Image 1 (cartoon, helix red, strand yellow):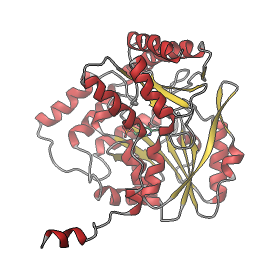
Image 2 (cartoon, helix red, strand yellow):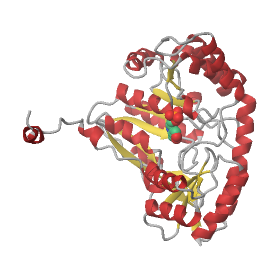
Image 3 (tube, helix red, strand yellow):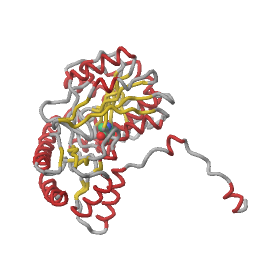
Image 4 (cartoon, rainbow, N blue to C red):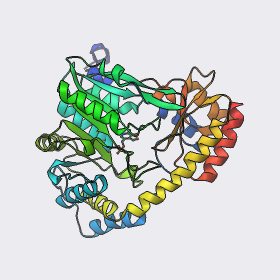
Length: 397
Ligand SMILES: Cc1ncc(COP(=O)(O)O)c(C=O)c1O
């Protein structure tokens, strides 16, 4: 074909929903900072949502042993039976309510659990009502399926993040399929109360809606063993799906392992759709998951204390700054703070890299109203945080 004929042809299209997904503004800022780091600049990266702790050795050992055993084959779509059984036992003991193994589906991360749910529930034109600001991937997973998102604002009032439930319920119409709540929340550290969860559950029961609860930070909470969970108040047959992950509680972000719990009738549907995504999580990674559940409580408690030190340090220092508006994070490992006079959080975050050598996530990156804020992940060593705060305070003026 002559070259001019080739250029006259149109590029074959990709789906509009895929084309329209915005690129991540956290990545935009991080790429900027990593480029400068590469050229030798000293920058403390607090932009991503992960701790500076590596996965505990006993969990890594379980994966190694599995590989040594030659466990390198396909496995069940819904997860290997020992992991589903270990998850059912772990959740039953932790929450004090019976969670049957048949309700558990193993996923290849919390993110893929979210995507799996949207693939299973959302038709084009459906909408999902979401409490925001929230991690943007929750919104984009709905959009990829041709759905729409509506945001109920969790607002910082009187030094607390608060959700107006009535305003959230008013967003529901006859195309609403689900209410999505991420609690404990990324980025705000807000945690929904049991009473609020009951109100959401009652509303969804009455209106025939799904409750999708992203509970990946349920063990990173500072005044109790776990955050309030929809699984404790729902009946097994309720239209409630709880998402969770090994990433945050056991410092396993790079392993890509998660799970979800739903009504028993849904497991079969999830199994079908898992086949067309990751088909099954790698067996040696699942074995590592079993080890985390069976031997990880000491580590979970230790990591919580480590993050608590970071939380207290960051909150105390930032709350003392006249330009900053901040609530004490109740859970998760983020400080989400407003900066007086800041109107473009992406440009501001890049300036902080230039002037202070500190890498934060811009509030504009989050879905449902984060502009005017910055997110600092405090899951790092106190010395690292303290040095970063010195430079941050200087740059903030
Ligand atoms: C709210 C929320 N949900 C889900 C995830 C997904 O975690 P992963 O895919 O690593 O399991 C994250 C990760 O940052 C998150 O912040």
